Length: 311
Image (tube, rainbow, N blue to C red; front, side, top):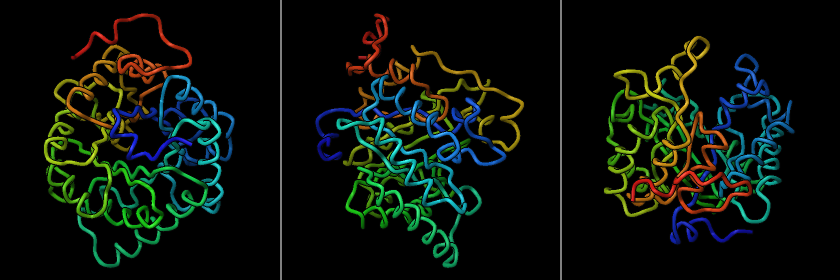
């Protein structure tokens, strides 16, 4: 087993894996109509292969494919299988992260007492199922409000494993409950988060400035997980992947491996300890990041001068 995750972060940046949800749909392993996470149960070999590709590329953390799991009859089986698949690909030297996605998302800028009870029951069940399956840490990600993310943190902390909590931003540099990245990160720490950061909806060029603000504001490790999609002219976030129905008619352009390698170097230069990725980040992107950060991969790329990026 690898060393304690938080201790490992103190020794230098850790490299995460890429995006699963949209990639499983793209590979025809999951379905928007039926629910993409069901790929874990319907096509476990395909999910395992994607985990293995990220591992070969150099990822040091593999996330269980449990993002976006809603109310389904086979929830416990899905979580158990998702963790087992990630663990099989991870082997003894990589970390396996449980994954928790929002329950309300953008639909509840504020939570009532009844909302909190409802979301707490949902998070308690999902965290418990993945912890029982044997995860090393938990990534609570793509949350639009500090209020909702904070409901999840105690359940992770009760399990005695690190809680990585990341917020997501679209057109505005504020959460849906009105907090800046720095303010949001501080509140998450006050509520028990061990690692804080930002993820999804934005590519590196518009997400890294938010990560810089978080890094300056907090003393705990910081995580950043951008998308791998080009922005449309004048945009600050990848609107085409979050507007209902638009994904079916617009296929975002994917960033080059060179742009992603530059992102990894810049994240390292500003002191980000957990350098990860989100939607659209494929194994070859992670390999470029590994090369740029001087990390080994099972199938290294040819010399592309990745290490000559931002110093």
